[in-house]
Length: 215
Image (cartoon, rainbow, N blue to C red; front, side, top):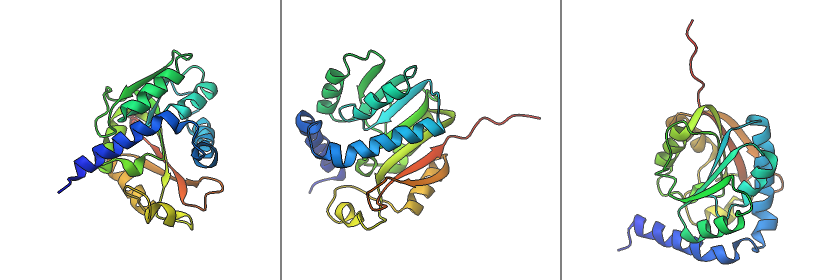
C-alpha cells in the first residue's frame, strides 16, 4: 500500500525531472507567465519596498527573475523540494547574485522567524502535503505586517474541472482557504482573480498582523 508521504515524494521527483524542459513548456506562456505577471503587479501594491522576498515552490526561479526587475533592492530567496528545479534555478540566476535557492519543503522552511517582508507562491499550494502546517511555517517566517500572496487553482469558476477533477493535489474553495489563512495567523485581505482563467486561478492576499502599539 502506498502512503501519502511516498506518493508526495514521487510527485516531487516528477517535478525534478520536468526541470529540464520546464522553462520551454507552453504552460509558461498560457498559464504560469500571466499568473506571475499579476503576482508581481499585486506585490508592488501590497508591499512596495520589501527588504526580502521568499518564493515557496519556486521551480526554476521564473517569478524571482521578475521580482528582481521590479524590486531591485530586495534580497531574493526561493525554496523548492525538487532538487532538479533548484539546480535549474541556480543555473539561470547566476547573473543575479541577490537570488539564492534552497532545497526545502514548505512544511519546514529553514529560516529564522520574521525573516521576510513578502512571501509568494504560485501554482504550488495544491501540491503541499500538509497545507495547514505549511501555512503556519509561512506565517512564522513572515515579518510583522508583511504580505503573503498565494496564487493557485481553487474549486471555483468554470475552469476548475480541469484541475479539481483531473489534477493532482488538494484544491480548496476560497472560503476554506480563507479559513486556513486565519487558522495560520494571517489576516486574509481577500481574493483577486487572475485575468482570463475563468475565476479558477485566484490570488489570496494575506497579511501578518502588525505589532501592537501600547498606549
